[in-house]
Amino acid sequence: MVDQDAEAGESKGMRSKPTPATKRMKRRIAAISREIQEIESLLHPDSGGDLSQQYFVLEQKKTHQIRGIVLEFHLAIEDLITSWLKGHLLSQGAVQQRTTQRARGMLATVLYSLLEGPRSLGFDRKLDLAEGLHLISKRLHERLTELNVIRNRCSHNWVLDIPIRKGIKRDQPKRRLVQYKNRDLFALSVIKEFEREYGRIYLKLWLKINA
Image (cartoon, rainbow, N blue to C red):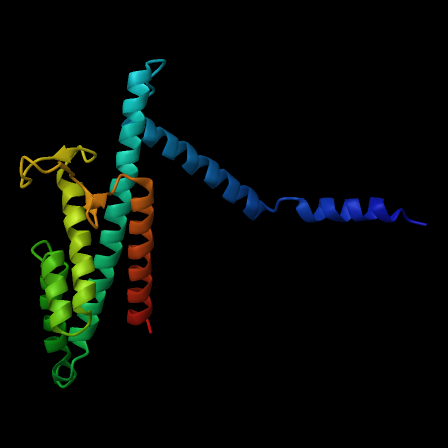
């Protein structure tokens, strides 16, 4: 009689044998992991045993992570808004009634220049247009405007985790440069709330546009 445990072990071993596709994917994962480590070392070189330098490097890593989260959400949401505006404007009745393909192509070119080209509208103007066309609500316009303010500060300032006095009265405490709902975005609880809110906004927009 065949030993059932031995048979099960052989069967399990056969199932777990990696396929050529799995081996290729593992090699690709290892390669891209090495590239990521090398790229990270360019931004954050080894500080050796210097504790002050180690802390500085960690501060920089945190800054880059927070900046990256803000820029990713801004880019992703702007891309959705841009696609939505183009699709909406090209699908209007007046456009559909045009008699020539050339005319439609010219309009598409104009919209590209207006919404995506090197001289395209900024994010704030796209939001104004989207609200004017009743694609987004006033409330959503306000939330995305705050995202744009945060993004601009992250894009135009190298050091983010700093207090500022500009616009604040002398008898009032300083505020942080990058804030979300009047709170320091560098606080872990605040960046988590930021990620949850704009993650939900992105998902709702994606579902509405792709419905």
